Length: 514
Figure 1 (cartoon, one colour):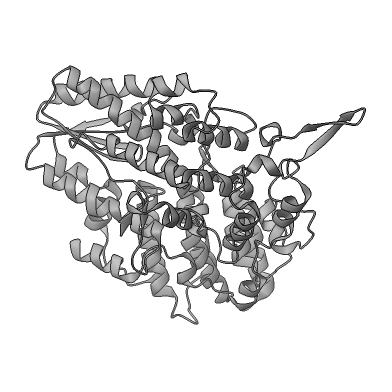
Figure 2 (cartoon, rainbow, N blue to C red):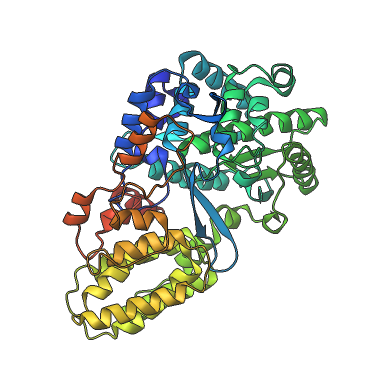
């Protein structure tokens, strides 16, 4: 694996224009965006995006330029419920023209040099280590899988090592990090606050360029950045790296030395032999973040003198200690259901469901009560939206064991009705459509991406492009983002390759560590 900061500006541009960098959450494999990004990039070239802005008449033969910040729904947003209750994570598909333009600006040679140099400053204090800079995979793992495995290889393992050196760990994270990032803090991060304020009207300053693009995506708003892309993860790291620098200054002013901090994006682990020092650093961190419009999550702020126990995620510890060999399929699923009750939405839960899928995939007939299995599985999904992809794969397998199409449809209707109780479940509907696409391709789902799968009408648009000139607008509106050949080729049962994040060697590595 290779940190993207090690890439030159050309390779960095190629990296950000990949499909999995554009949207790094889970979608069925028939959603394809890379070709759209490619043709948009070819059309824009090295030009400024404002050369493609459309104009509107204002009377007497006069016109006025349209700006993306004047239009709503420039990005496509859909909500992923986080807990089966009232917490949602807004995912966004960034408007392709804005995305390509921003990638082009960031990866211009001098701009990329400026950004990479600034990250070197962020990392000067060796007592504060960040492990969430996006990575490029150098094997068959996806970039996303490589980045997530960094948690296990660096955060968990290094935390265990630090138990030799320190007695206490304070764990905390930022509340609604992406939704709280102030767009003006990006130029502060890249150029320092003083220089950014002095050059706030310099439209070529890369920090200001990024700030402007973020506002263009958000109807002119300055609070929050989109979630769902590696590019936005990278921009978040700029602001969080700047926070590391400011925190380092405050710690140095107080002459604190008995500490080490590990950060993975907005998750912090503060180690010390003195709990008062860890608490003092947390207070300093709070003060730094408040100046950037962010704050710590009080409910997730925990001090512990058991570093070993707290270095490993509690869901993983629970699963290691409680799992057993289940002889029956229903018993196996009930054990996983118990895990979902104790640790909903956890990584261990997704992994346990992956192993259950492996058990089920070779079964072509069973005397088990399929409706009961579907009921248990649906309840897991209901409270753990993170499991939608792998649970959908299991659901498709269970439905394939039912020969009666009428019974299948009845079960699907019950599932749909159950999830209708949760508002704003666009991500779920996308995966339910994958379950039904071969069984009932015309089944309707009230999510625009789902409508795009079955409706070839070019008037159905994902992004608002009314601010663009005709040529670029037409490219975006007519370039397919659904590969119907994939839909034709996929099976009724969702293959594990469609939903599997990690290749087998990573799973084997984790199992050996257990």
